[in-house]
View 1 (tube, rainbow, N blue to C red):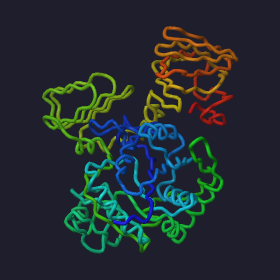
View 2: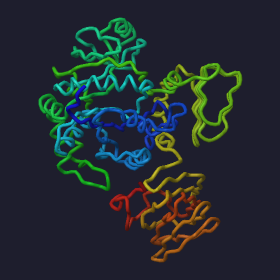
View 3: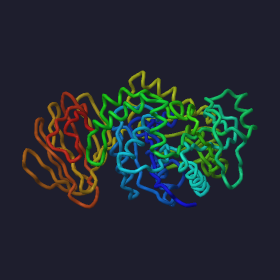
View 4: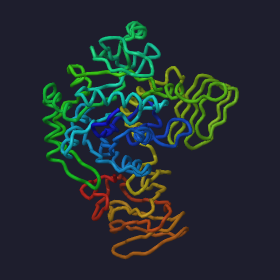
Length: 486
């Protein structure tokens, strides 16, 4: 095949994945976790890495919520990928605005590439077949078609939307694109069973391929309010390190709508290609069990786990020893602050528990004890009414902001590495088993000058210990204007 257009991946990193709670939470959703077997790369990293053999591949555009910007940047750095841009959404507005922003940004950079829109949280087991279908789709996209990839259904699934082609789709080794007749929302069981036996229907994967100019043309025609708001948000954007921050007020005016509904259901340019590459949207713990390489007795074991007389279970431990004895068809997931125990056939209903936790104001609903920051991370260990203890890890060469607290004092004890402390203008080094005290109102900063991570224990005490008690004076991550400890 002759390549006529460059190919830019557009990786959509939104979503919280609440059905994979307690691992996936708003502060650190499933796309940033390594979930499938022995692969240590996260779902986001795998999404980018599986494309590396495509011809004419450009660096990706990534679109994420501003709260996750440093996670995305760090995970791309770990796989030596320099994004064209990391675009920050101030609020979630579904996939149509994200696609519009990506297309407008691509055109603004001076060319008209093919955009391959992918979700950051999908699994693909047969990468060779996936790439073959993508290459086949490029022919249609180069000819001005809006291409989507339909998953050949293996069961009468009621949790997915469906795509109907105008004629039966081939299932041979050479995928052929067919015009789209219609999109169908999640059907009932009886309808899904009919779709399964009809060769025209595939699952809607949410993956798309098209020329940037063609998508902009169709958005202007079919969803003008989306493209107008996105154009304004880009015109008033701001650059923050390697991030492109969309203007909040303009972007907030954009309708909350999926690209399927805004464009694909209405356009006459839609083409669907069948995809049979071991695809999963990792929508639940039971889906992870189904797609994993199961060990003896049908078990999937992750982490520090022992299983005896146990069958068809998904057992995952992030910290403590987890023992399964004489159990069957269960999902058990342990994190540092919560344990999920569910019947495997009911695991998809975890999201109702998350809603209940959110309604109760439980911190476990949205955040882990371990919180990631651009300089490293911190983990809450224990807390009282006027004190709390954290473990802090600072990456080599990284630095916290120069800051001050109105309501709390801090005591730092280094347990690994060497830290450079700045305190009211004075700078000094402290090593392992050494400590320093930061009184209330003191202007201070901590830097890791070495080549290995610095770990320290921080003891905070004071009348108020909230993370919004922080005044920044200098910050190498562009956070001086923020008031929370992001």
